[in-house]
Length: 278
Length: 303
Image (cartoon, rainbow over all chains, first blue to last red; front, side, top):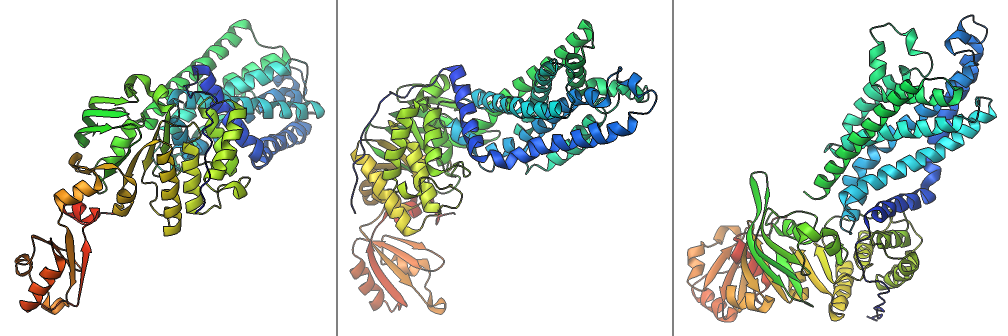
């Protein structure tokens, strides 16, 4: 058997990359994966929000356009303009929930790519943060595409919708982080994710003031909306797009979302570290 | 390269590794042998700095895994028991991405990937996705990937489990080549022929402790006889162990055959014959590590 000689080319002595650099290397790896496989997810991440935009913004919107009182509920702007920033936030929350469930469990259990990473200088904290940063970056990217579509259909009131995109990405990240921690704690085959989608994500998308003001709900249900991160995100996104919202309210929404993000990151880092180095 | 003293690993109430001493020298191929659950993989994971030790001391490449995990891992190559390739990426992408995890520059990683594709004989499949590759190819890719950072120490956890003979021999040849290049290797296996082929020195583990240590030849000499007489009997005239023990130093009764450990197999066979024992078949062979293993762990391989 012929034996090829392996050139002992050692250009750089292998050393552990710096902390933030390590996070970015994980992001780079997900980016490379996405570059090759983006078609598989592009449809669901853009087409689905587009369907919501068409069905509710244009279809349902035309139905209520002539109804007295509709303008009052939306603060005087067309329903589509009122709905669009909220849909932006809803789409990031939905993709956050999806991206942080099965893919995370797969990283530990099925494909085990996290285990491959953990054998290199990368730490559990860098892997968790890298994946989260990547998901946030991807939400920004697909959110921007969505925003262009919204503008094309006449849903963008002002340049403030760029702020709505920022609010939507923050909301997505604030949901993504705790969901990531939840997934990292699962040992099963992901059966719990169905419950998460059905009993957390779906009610959250329906009752966070996306399609109708929370004020339209019975008074005793309204506090439930306040614990929903999507409600806070929707308030922020609308405040940016429509110029509504007071400084106090905006500060409250921001604080809630940042706190949720911080708790989620803290839990994820702990759980990743423990699961990757038992 | 590796020095462990009274190394222990406990998972809850279960102590997987119960105080072992290990020294692995530079350039050596060192093996951990043992049945499933012996504590081999737990030990490997502690050396790989992906599992903190419960107690004892451990130095890998002169550093403490608890303190310098990332710095040690930067100089290790790891072949895990279960492949964790990214099956949705191409063969080449898997190598390049892995190299980047070590913070190696893109250009270096590209050149290295090309070189490792040659090494693993995967150049023709470089642009294919990993998913449809055969088990042997995936394993070769995993080994190539573990070399992307030019490791000083290569850790291989059951590298050939589940491979067909051709694939195993190709892998052994590659590992031998690495050995000649001076790469220190630590291997766990439960294939005795693999340990005999590859390892300069090995330890046999059972129940979390080391039960024997030495080169394959030393272990055979110390724990087994020169020859083994393998006998098969018809179920009806299968003799008891006591009848056979008269003609050998030691007898191992397996479900399907009897192993007689003896210095001279031919002579024992003749003695059996004159004692009126008539096996269906008899085979004299030299002792192997498998015999050592049977003796030390007191059982056939648990798979």
